[in-house]
Length: 426
Ligand SMILES: Cc1ncc(COP(=O)(O)O)c(C=O)c1O
Ligand SMILES: N[C@@H](CCCC[NH3+])C(=O)O
Image (cartoon, rainbow, N blue to C red; front, side, top):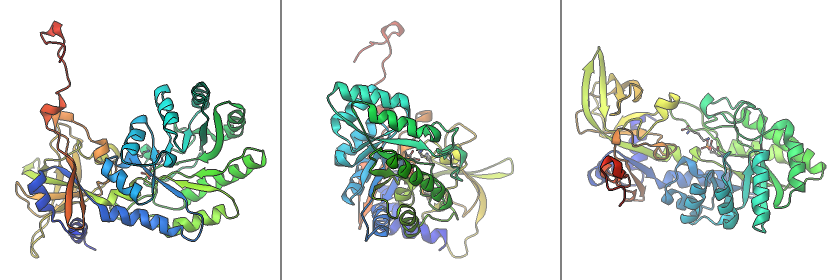
């Protein structure tokens, strides 16, 4: 399928032309196709049919818009969270507390208290220090915290270094060889119910082998711990399933489910998965407008109204995202190489180098694909750029699920102190 076809198919699939959205909402904006999100979560759930159904906790960090979380909750998913803020979002979107898992290496006392009060399914605990803290707070509140220990399996995920989380020098989880000791401690602690083992080795993993290596280790450890008398009942195997941004293979739900079934056969266990990117990345584009087409230093630059402020992945990880014209290219139209750049005053604000595109004109629209995950959530206001609106499209209708925030609203809360001649108060 040609990328142009992809753009038009994916973007008009839900029955709304992108140009109509741009005309009504303005650019840049994120546009998400609900049908793609539904298709992805259903594929995962379907792949495990016929056996005990795992709990899919959508990793809210990938795209934390309330409407997106609500959509997944309606599709039977829970939420994987990494902060009090994400727990609050999941609750506001209608996720039941009993379907929320909570990881993160820096849980504060306040966040721990909030999660205990909420009555979440599970704390994914990342250190002995955190375990002791949760025990103390839970005991003080007369509560028992349901706990899975996140164990670092020391497995290379074969993904970008910056999004690998399961090697022993990464900051996440409890060292593999300390697992037995920390579980024994957890069993002795008042306020803690150790019931699960958790791992997550990284993101955008496009082959099954790293999952197999990590899951094998997890299952071995799970069995050993049970044998040693730790009453474990839940295995949370994290997320990390990759998607094709360009030509990478996809982790297919069926093949993945086969692998999990093979590795967990005969084990009486509740399974949890935490997919983020794989559910939302391909559902989203950034709809952007050409500001100029300029030539300098022997290069051609397509200057857009979107850059690293709305999608930091190219600048941060060298990630590839296709940039496609929204209008149909004419059959004989010449495609010429150009660098696609954003408006930000940083030389790293490049969305793509040497992209073959028609000679677009100011005002023409382009779609930056694969932007449903880690797009809006990692956006910034750098250069006092307004934050971009988010739009959800489904079956011929669309809704603005977050409006543009103009620059003046972004400094509305700032205060100039009285010694600088300000009022210092509202
Ligand atoms: C603990 C945990 N679970 C789930 C995810 C979701 O990962 P992904 O979006 O790659 O599926 C992440 C992010 O990498 C994570 O840190
Ligand atoms: N932010 C990363 C993924 C990190 C996932 C969280 N551990 C990305 O855009 O690819």
